[in-house]
Image 1 (cartoon, chains in turn cyan, yellow):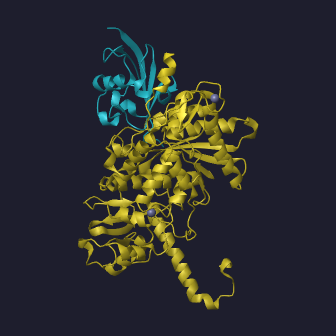
Image 2 (cartoon, chains in turn purple, orange):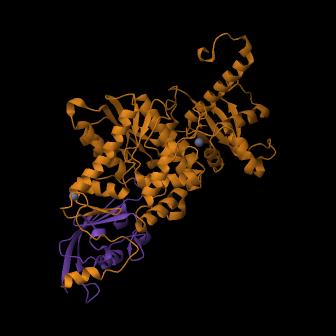
Image 3 (cartoon, rainbow over the protein chains, first blue to last red):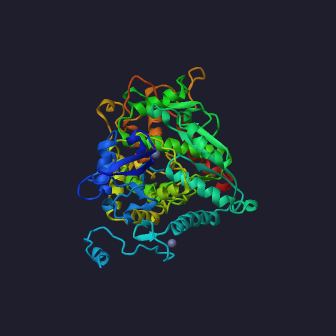
Length: 103
Length: 464
Ligand SMILES: [Zn+2]
Ligand SMILES: [Zn+2]
């Protein structure tokens, strides 16, 4: 199975849930749910199983990220990229920004 | 063609799915951001974002009598909104270097790390604002207990809340400011009340610092998402009377320090994206409800509710914020009816009204005098004999001073005070509170004296 190399970034406090690491390069299977290609939905649940250190309820709500967490895929709002259905590509740069508690 | 088929087979979601992927403004560039129902390219997004800021600061400029050359203070929490605000203020002020709008910009951060037993946030914050070369003031929240954080600049008598909800005014006890603040906040188990206290202590400290540094304006970074959360939570906490002052784009309630909220029209989503594009790294500062479940406090619950609603109905925040903006301060707001804790206005005779509808007396204090459960015992300094409020230590006078204190609180603060658990630790309110009580009393005395001698006076009221 081939792997996709992607860059994940965290800010706005969400990094605390990921071992306080702001940036991380990871390799994920190109098809987490064969035969389909890996989507954002797969990535989020993969992150939950492999990266999330604590309190999944602060990161996730159902099978998506919690409201108030922004996701940018290659500097583009994921709401314009198909959100959960977006198919991850090798080299993607994905940013998670928490806007909760902003002030 | 298969691509066309794909587009038509989109399932009909409740949520808006943009049909065009081009920017609604320039119509040519590929859209990369969805704000409410509009799609923007990067350039247009930034243009619109900066425009909202400028519109607000320019409005506040013409509204004030100061014009140019004003010295301002930026309240800087380090969070995304204040981070973006500082950058925008800087760009705005440096646009025409020889014609600066603000003569001086002071950045002020209040460190509340004590409450979380964490290390100070000041070094990190100072580092993140260093590149602007603005004077930086880093304060510790506990230092609000210093006698110079008062109107007079030196006021060392404080109000103590004692066992059986007795409150005494006395000479500043020897505990350190950090101990005093911890004692107060650790004895409030209700997080809503705790957040309330922290916020108003911070606000009072900011106003005081701005005033003493000659700043005529204080910029606060509340964005529209934050403000709509505030509008709902203030209402549910019984702070509706002061709500217009606490959420408006500008208020002169603090007279010599005008509060401006230039970020009031930006969503937290817009701010997060702007910071990401501008490479502005915010400092994540934890507060007492960080990482807590949604029901931890009214504020947290409201945040959860509004942010969740906004996800499905992207006009939620703007609708609440616009409705809130229509609220204007009540005509019955009077400068002299200022709560001594939160400094917000209270309704005239709010106590009478409150006593009528709320059971205020707790069993342990019923025998004291029935009318309320807060007692103020006044004894500034044992050696000077009697206190500044002119009362002796007899229990009768105690309840009188007690009533005076209760009278100088707004409805919400009076409710908050009741949540302070009395332990064997000394629970003390900062000196500015005691100073406020004294000031209020003096004003009332002057009024009463005037009444007595009115008929002998020849001059008009203004001359007195
Ligand atoms: Zn455009
Ligand atoms: Zn109050």
